[in-house]
Image (tube, rainbow, N blue to C red; front, side):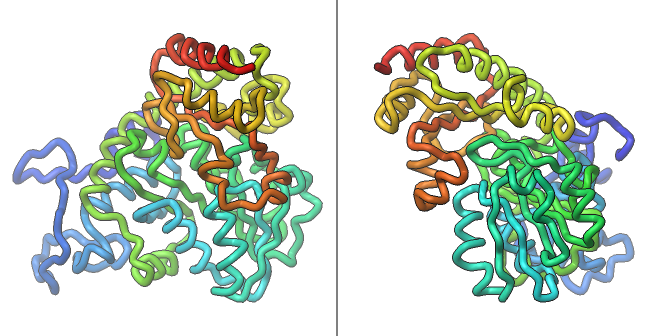
Length: 391
């Protein structure tokens, strides 16, 4: 289905259909183990082991179906599904052969990813991590052969900076550096990093891929062989179970339709906030005066459903705002059909020290909004009413 449209691939790719039963959707193989060795000449093989299925920590038909659907919308030859986004990130990073070289990463990261790089990765692998701002990385001067890998978020959490992936990818290719991109905020609908220079792309499938805030998952996609990542998944045990895989696969079928609405709603709300007297600053690359607008136009097919903004009144004002909302829920996740709002200093970046938050641009008065697919007029009315409570 590689030559089909996005929605056609999202719906039809990876589906398991058994003519003996005539099922329309992929069944849930709720098995811990399988008959092995399976001598049936028509047996199905696990794509990762090239053998019959044996044990669901290694592979499961429902999980395989999910991986094939994800690979299709991501434009990847190979893919693996995990129990969470962090399981995908840590498994990938621990599986790389860096040949003693350092990793260059943006500091503008999800808090737990930053914690892994700062507190665990070097101790576990012996490879140091240098942290720089997304703006420094976009300047390209710092990318040298001293690094074995570059890691970035294509749209950063929560400051909504945009990496110039096309140019970064060119430099990494010239230098022989492995480029890893967390594209969770973009989703495969708005960006396919493998097509513009990345060697590996990772996602928290908990977010836009599933889209319903009811299950957790993570993904790695690549056009490279992924045997070492598969082996690491077996070792660490971060395999997604079949029921969770079924739910994510079901959610992915509407990814394109949902993202069109997320993109539109977020842009409308960003424009509203941009003109509001109680709002100090809006971070959204779809705004023409955003410092990342020109980068986003080149690197993204859509500007996404995530935005952040600063309000008057500091931390107290930001807290007052989110708890005054009637229809938008205060919760720390994102990417679901429902709109969610959070304060990064209280949730995703509460474990990040104040110095690092300053470098990231994560202020006490920053509000992160995951814009859902509700009627945008109702969302704007809710936000406007809550802003009116601020001094």
